Amino acid sequence: MTHVFEHASSGRAKCRGCDQPIGKGELRFGERQPNAFGEGEMTLWFHPWCAAYKRPEPFLEALDAAGAALLREMKDAERMRAAAEFGITHRRVPRVNGAGRAPTGRARCRHCRELIEKDSWRIGLVFFEEYRFEPSGYIHAACAAPYLESIDILDRVRHFSGDLSDADLRALKKAMKHRAS
Image 1 (cartoon, rainbow, N blue to C red):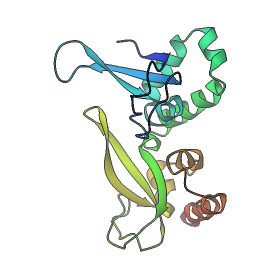
Image 2: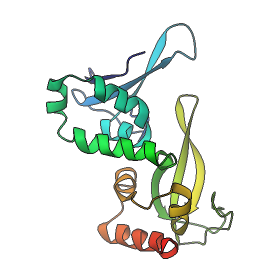
Image 3: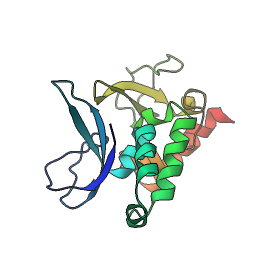
Image 4: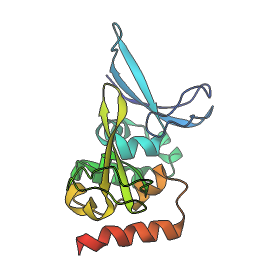
């Protein structure tokens, strides 16, 4: 199965990584998988950045096979490659699905198993199972370093939590460093 980069022929497909539409003519990444519902194969569509962050192995396979013309068209191809390689090096980092403040104090951290206090920073996690991303809980911002083996995740958080301000990201970074230091 060969993964592909191509321009969207319509605007009907949604990105599997962020659940947002992929616009007509926009460059997209297609991860080929065996068809779960019959013979042949199916394609899971992603925005290129979403694929680099959440599906690094197939993304890099396709990037390595891409022609020079496509690489010139992808303005951030080397930054995407670095993000995907970082996700492979730190195997839990592709699980990051944004961040925010806890609306209640009922969720438990997947790392330390303690309750995540209301209004404290938490990082959302997902697992890729059966061709989709399934929510899998949260970790304290302070547990990012031991759980993810890195706190260099703000670019991913910004990507999947577009409503966070620069001040929010600084506060999240400070909360992550609280335990890391």
